[in-house]
Amino acid sequence: MAVAQVDARQLVRKLEAALGVENVLWRDYDLRLYEYDGSIDKARPQVVVFPTSTAQVAEVVRLCNEAKVPLTARGAGTGLSGGSIPLDGGVLMVFSRLNHILEVDLENLRAVVEPGVVNLYLSQAIAGTGLHFVPDPSSQKACTIGGNVGENSGGPHTLLYGVTTNHVTGLEFVTSSGEVIETGGKALDAPGYDLTGLIVGSEGTFGVVTRVIVRLSPLAEAVKTVLAVFDRIEDASATVSGVIAAGIVPSAIEMMDQLSIQAVEAAVHAGYPTDAAAVLLIEIDSLQEGIEDLLGSITKICEENRAREIRTAKTAKERNLLWLGRKGAFGAMGRVSPDFYVMDGCVPRDKLPEVLTRIEAISQKYGLRIANVFHAGDGNLHPLVLFDSEHPGEEDKVREMGYEILAVCADVGGALTGEHGIGFEKREMMGLTFNDDDLNWMNLVKQAMDPTGLLNPGKIFPTPGKCWMPRPRRAAAVGW
Image (cartoon, rainbow, N blue to C red; front, side, top):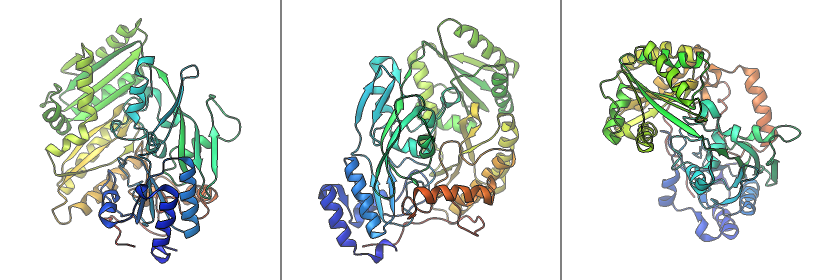
């Protein structure tokens, strides 16, 4: 039963009674602000709610179940796969007011936070303790830890430290029936099934997370950041494989191609050489003793692969400026294109030169530029297709390009996502890497966790019997 078939006004009144009038939006003007995330898809909710407690979340879930209304959870809306857009309308639950750091447990290296806490704020809050929260998506100034949990987000430093699931030890979440459940805890490992690991990365399709226990990590004693400049992107790719093959695992190895470099340099003036074919941003952290040896080994590998310049940041300011450029790369694309469509696929490191060549061929085929900026160390690609949505047909074209790019990733033994999730964007592409048995097992888990199918419907799973076809997703034309 769709939300338009129920007494919508009655549902709004019940939500206002449960959360307060100030925490419920239902007028069309307000809803337009919540019909999109960081992807190019749109769908408008029919009501937006801002819970301020776990009890309120549970009550909203109960009311949605009672009215058979779909419910979608949303963090800061920075997601890039359409994961938080409400495809079937219904209720959109926003966590910007459930945003407190509840506990910092220094003895156990843990923090307990609500889902609306902005990623970077946690590390800032504990800056004087010598600890930090490791997962650092490029959007960490805006994205929330609840959203990170939903998408199992990564970031540049996941090469050494892992993604969000490696830094979450426990959760509180509300099931599809409105029951409040706790999984895991502060201990390193909890007995029984790893339900915490099951929920992290489930994109809000299993339950609504209301509290997160995260691991805090000591800041490194010594850090070195290297900028290596190359005249051929193949040499930069070979350097990545060479560093890992030598038994060195830096905390980050990031790559940008020339188009990305030019956009970033125009935006932040970090000192990137705009005539280079590619640059690598390599960061190592360790004990003070031995870090110079690691730096020397990396420098030698860069030289062996024909790096024309190797520059080590001499100050914290210089290091931060280099990272400001890398983490601001997506936003910098606005200087060279009205719109961009970012993809997220993973490939084996040794396939990087081949995959980048094939991506360039796709760019030539469709006549649209592609900028490459990505986590080279773990093969997590982020090709950005540059286009103008005002030109008729270009949005459909970039969707076709996105499919072909991910098909290349699958063809070389890679994955459809490294950190952005499947969401709506890639659901019809799941057949590229999973067979029917795989998808059936996943569906069984989904049905067990969400038997009503009301939690973030339309995400992850392909439409039964449908072959992939790129189609624009417009704002849902539904109303009260």
